[in-house]
Each structure stands twice: as structure tokens, then as C-alpha cells.
Length: 293
Image 1 (cartoon, helix red, strand yellow):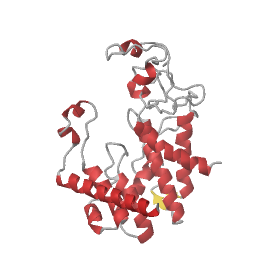
Image 2: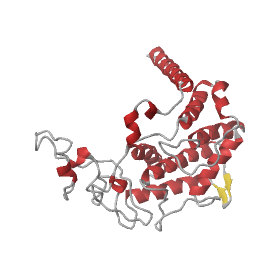
Image 3: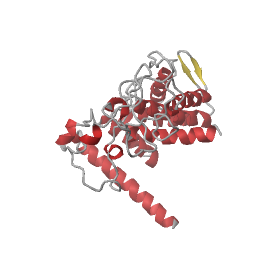
Image 4: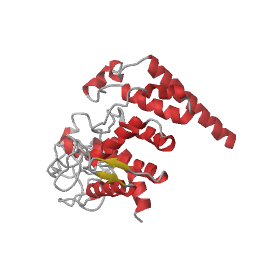
């Protein structure tokens, strides 16, 4: 069994290296090949994926050739971390662990920490907050909240492991500052906000009832087995009734910069759930559950 697991791990690493080589040799955004994608979810660039992948491969292999891509360009301090903008915060935070361990790649560590300073309201370009304390970036806000909060909990682990702190313009940051910040954002998402609304569907009794999601808004085939066409779906889309199916665990895009939320199926900027919002939240909740028993 051990030999099988070891072989499986080596195979995955081999495939990862092959994919990286392919991507490096044939650079470009995916919608150049899948042209229909450009109408919906076009990528702003591919460089962030290559840079982030190079750091992961360096950590997995120890081969310096992968880290060479980082030299001379830390990317500066970023304003957010998302599915379309990992350049370069993902790399900065990953490399920061090496910096704490070996005192190398200091610029990456500095830039990553300045990003954290900004959303802790202790930096040079602080990210604004709503009146009730939720960070505010742009529309579809909660996906950016969960990613930066995931960064905070990850960096908490790094600082704790190496008994380290770091300095912001507004003071020295202790590891626990990051955990307190993470808890404040998650508490807001889960219902500690002016509306007493949980933006996670199915949590508590006051959560979004008209989530912008086709599967949740169309009646189950157990109730009506007739097929629903694309146009036929608009009958349910335009309904004023709550969704017939509760999308337990989904997290919608959340309130606006004034803490307001309009629970309306057509209001996709606030009522749409995404996997990029929920995915980092899983890691955050695991850490908070362990830390605040």
C-alpha cells in the first residue's frame, strides 16, 4: 500500500511538471481557444497561474529552476486575491513561508505582508469597510472577503510556527490579530450583521430565499417530472416565491458597501452563489472551529 501511494504521488508530480511545461511553451488565455468563454468568464491573463504554479512546483520538488520565474518581479502589493487575480499574492504568501524559514525572498514576504496590513486597516492603502465592519472591494464582494480571510488564517499559521510578527505602518501585527480579523469577517457572513442575515444558505432561519441558481429555483422532478426548457426556466426565475430547493451551504455574493442586501433572484450581483466564495471559507471555518472551541 505504501509503495502504491508513493507511486501515485510521483505520478501526480510528473503530470504537474508536464502540465507546467506545456503551459510555459504555449502561453495564452484559455478563451483564445474556447472562444465562447469570452462572453461569460474571460481571463484577464495567464501570468498569475504560471507564477503560482512555479512556486508550488518549487515547494514540491526543491528544483531551483521553478523559483527562477520569481526573480526580479514580486508583483508589488496587490489589492485583492481572486480566481482571476492571483498575481502575485498567492506566490507571495507561499514564498513567505520560505522567507520565514530561511530569510530569503524578502521582497515577496514584504509585499504579501503589506497586503495584509491594508485589510487590517494598518497599511498605506487600507481597504475600506462597511459601517458594520465588512471589508468592501467591489460587487460580488464576499468572494474577495473569503479569499483574503483565508490568507489571514494561513499567515496566522506561518507566524505561529516561527514565533514571528511583522510591522505595518499602523503598528506591529501579532499572529492572533489575524485570527481575530478572520473571525470578525466570518461572523458577519454568518449573521452578525445589521440585517441579522446569514449569507450562507440554510444557516439559521434568516438567509437568502431567492438564490440566483437554476437548480435551486426550479421545482424538483419528484414534484413535476416534466422537462424544463431553457426558456421555460424563466417561469421560475421570475417567480416571487422562495426557491423550492434550499441550496444548503452555498454562500451568496452578499451585501453592498452600505450593508444592504436585496434578496431577489434577478439580483445576481448579490444573490448569486459561487464555488470561489465557498472554497476558501471551508478552510477558514476548519481553522476557527479548532481555535474557538
